[in-house]
Length: 198
Image (cartoon, rainbow, N blue to C red; front, side):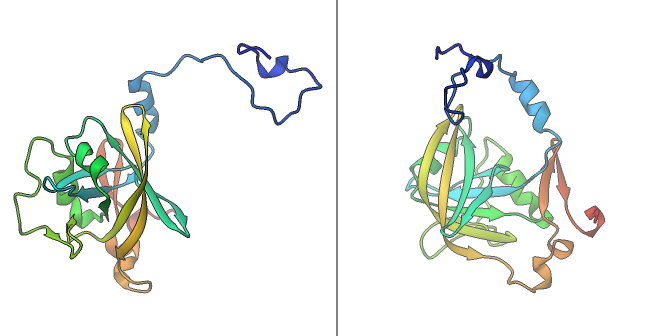
């Protein structure tokens, strides 16, 4: 089959599970792609790391869990962020999953051109050395196990080594109390009882 063949060009004697080559389709513009995701809400996290040159932090909406055994999560970082080189070099990171009460931390990680660690009253170091924000609703310390270049970003896979979160049954573990922080249509939102539809 030629590289320009379409699926309906396949002869009946070819196996149906065969991977078919397709011609390149016109791609969408960055603005079109962003518009498509604008109404797709995402939880807000702040990633911190220190590869030996000082602590860095950035705000991300790309964090998601991919496995519970082993416990793995993934996030992406843009090459445009000043924090990305450190995160790419770091062996470990701390992923902070934020509630609405931690909006100031989210904004801190999203603001460029500032020292995000100037206020020493809001962050500390774990016994293992990583910088973290104790006020975060939950955080996960993990080891970077894989990285993949993807366009202008790096996708980072992390295996959880330690977590801090409200225990099951604790009222603060419920969204009505914790009110998770969500980013939607270029605006911060809180989830809670008011947002339930079922």
